[in-house]
Length: 383
Image (cartoon, rainbow, N blue to C red; front, side, top):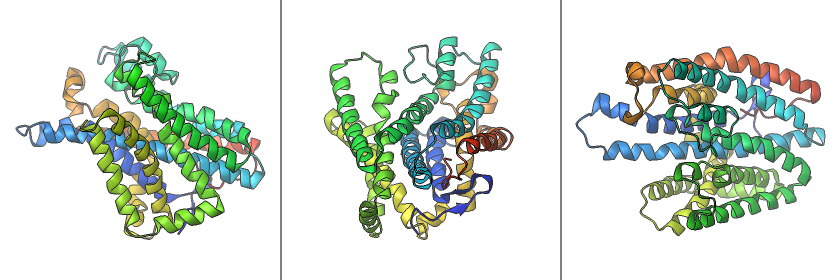
């Protein structure tokens, strides 16, 4: 099965079920990283911290999988819309994105504001406001664990603003591929130069969350999608990724590089080079499961449980930050809710309520409004 196989998805038209499974992998890595201390507290309090500190390293890998997914899927959507209509509707795109992303995040931010105002948690107004405006990854306001995950959502929002406009402006696939390749290389070079010479003077916490430092992970997903939309490159990629040994080698390579980078066992030049290689490998791994979804990894990713968790992954990413915390950021009033198994149950409960009461109804509204501007149906849902 190739990436062209689509499965019915009710109002949303059609979608690629394998990608829901990948969202489950991504959010699972984040959950494991953020719940590592509560797992240790509940199950193995006398065991040393080394194992659990190691688990914390893979939360970023989960975020980078989300980045690769976003770049690949949004670009695939844009290519499909253009093939159908001859162009893309920016108004339609931005309306769908706004109704997909904003309602759930605004409800979460309201909850955080109420908890902060009541003294349960401490969140500065500057941090909350920069988060609301999707500027959290550049803000120098006092940080807060409970809004810390919005750095990655800011990166994605900046991508949603810029890439569709660039896609429309560049007009053909060759120019878009050149743009994506140049973007990946320039961002990788800029990251190394800024790190070495401290040109912007950012603290490490701000530096590693900035869009200009992390966006190559999304652009690599863009590049793979653009190449796969070209008939010649599609054939090449299908041949390569259909070789049985290639996919597991790529998986081992990605996690091996992530481990080496996180453990700081490499020189900074090699570590920075591997950051770029890893960003390219992740969307190739994703594409491999789309091409061969009848194989074991594809069947797992398309299983009922994986697809359901994938559907709640956005809200789960939002709400887990309130309940899955490391020991140093626990607060007295919430401590019983931040311990196993209550924290996991509450994270999934809040995510499920968000999906069914907020996301799905408003996504439908967004699609209806977008359809008025672009009446032809879309081929691939954006989420």
